Length: 183
Image (cartoon, rainbow, N blue to C red):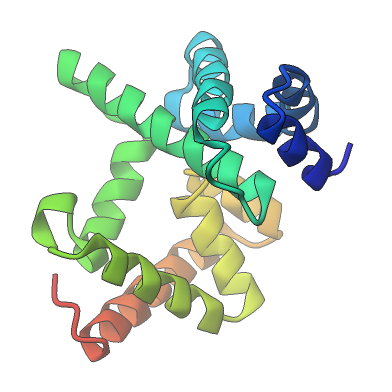
């Protein structure tokens, strides 16, 4: 089923929208959640929560790209779940590493005033990247993939991934400063 048909099902308030969303994007969302949570049960709950959130958001919102819309919801829910679990017990993992790496460029939520300006600046920055560095950056910081997985998926060494990420973070920091966004 195509995305427009699924969106129309949400607008019609048909429960078929959730089944079709899960059928088409369930594995994709599950991968995102599992990369963050490393727990099949938590990932499944996160994906189920994604469909509930989508149901409550569409309408009035009408996503342009359904995969990105669902991926963003899943990612945010998984990060929230991870933060809650981390606050309840000590620990770390891939997400802590990713967030620490990015913190030097974009800070933390408390460090910047206008999230929309930062989001737009990062979107513009990513649009300016060549395909390979952009893919590496997105796999690491959007999908929260371990360095070894990024290397395997991109067909390069882990060292090359680390160097690409470091260069891209440095470019991002410079770009944000040029845009007047200081972290």
